Amino acid sequence: MTTVSLRRGKASRIEYNSRRNATSGSAKQLHQQEAEVLEGVSGAKNAGSGFSLSGFPDRRASARGIKGQLLEMSEIGSGESALARQASSSSRRGGRRKETRVTVPLNDFRAQWRTVGAEVLAAVDRVGASGWYILGREVERFESALASTWGLAHAIGVGNGLDAIEIGLRCLGIRPGDKVLTSPLSAFATTLAVMRCAGVPVFVDTDASGLLDLDRCRELLSHDRRIRLVVPVHLYGHCVDLEGLETLREEFDLGIVEDCAQAIGARFRGRGVGTVGQVAAVSFYPTKNLGALGDGGAVLTADEAIARRARALRHYGQSATYVHDEAGLNSRLDEVHAAVLGDVFLPRLAQWTTRRTEVATRYRSEVRNDAVRLVPVPEGSASVWHLFPVLCEARRREAYRAHLSGAGVSTGIHYPRLIPEQKAMRDYGSYEVHGPLKNAQKLAEGEVSLPIHPFLSEDDVDRVMSAVRGWAG
Image 1 (cartoon, rainbow, N blue to C red):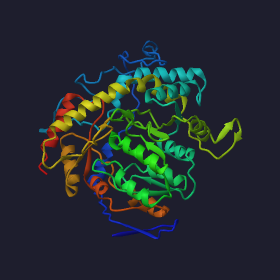
Image 2: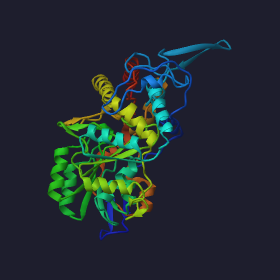
Image 3: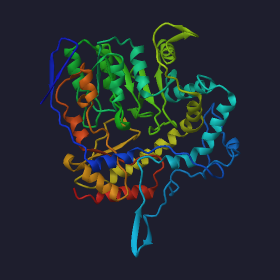
Image 4: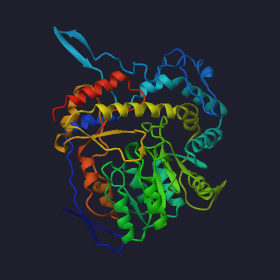
């Protein structure tokens, strides 16, 4: 039993059950497989086929002439990915036969580059030639296209997803000491945004799918009317029950910032994610479904006043040049990222999401192993499969990951430690945990993420499923 003392507010103690998993040396080595980084590449031939979006002309013609720095393009589902398709290769050394396994990566940025490199370099060339690198035409064009795709009136490009949440909370009027109801199971950035606003994060359990338990939210909101802000997380690419969220918003007069970092394009019974809250926050971190070649994010809203303030907050709080009405941030989506996102990645988002869904459908139908359980998809959610989580016995998780690694399959964990258990939270001190976090803890202790991205071939999926079925538990 762990006791958390609060430094703010009238409540003196909140008790909750927590268990921490020690991470072994072998586990740390496995975690490194998740840290795929973008690498420069050179040498190539011609550009592959691309898509165009209204307002974003196809740049392939100009891309073909960029100084021979491009890789040969490949198409999604062509049967060949970034890595060699052989199951293994062997060589003779000292009379022994050495086998080198091909790895199915969590994310395949090299394959992505072969598909989009020409167009990316064309976009970069255009920005470079323009001589305008911050808050110019490229950002405006991308913001307009993103807002149109999302179905909201305004999109404001910012530096990252963390800043998007913080700016959203500030636009909704958060004050120091305000309580913000949110999920204990997420990337730490979700809660860090509340901390940077000097708010008090308030945690309740998730449901079995890892999404904020709205019934527990209702119970808590009924007893504590001081909670006026909520940051629900659309985890794994699933969509929170938007009908239930809207009911809570109206009943308790809530300000809501939807953390959509993992769920761009997800829907609940036909309604788009990020449309119940006054603000939607999204990240363009490279691993996201719509990822940049670096950090980026956006605030989306239907409210013109919120949009106007968000634009000021991202730019030092300026309402006009050198006129600062409040202390803002330096959090601007730059022209290069906006051009790449607008020209290259956003037009492909629907296609890439379709491929993720195809892979997830195979996984869900072919995971046949009593020692591996599927995380349930929320009823009504049309998920976009940012991640594909499965559950295994907690004490055997690292052995399971080692088995998959030995079969050439990379894995991840999202997330191994609940946010209230982080040292940064204990040091901050001002937070509340209401009720046991049983579902969230179960996911934190037993979840394993299988590879899921648009560049997986059918052979890759076969390899993953074969490895999963081969686990003895």
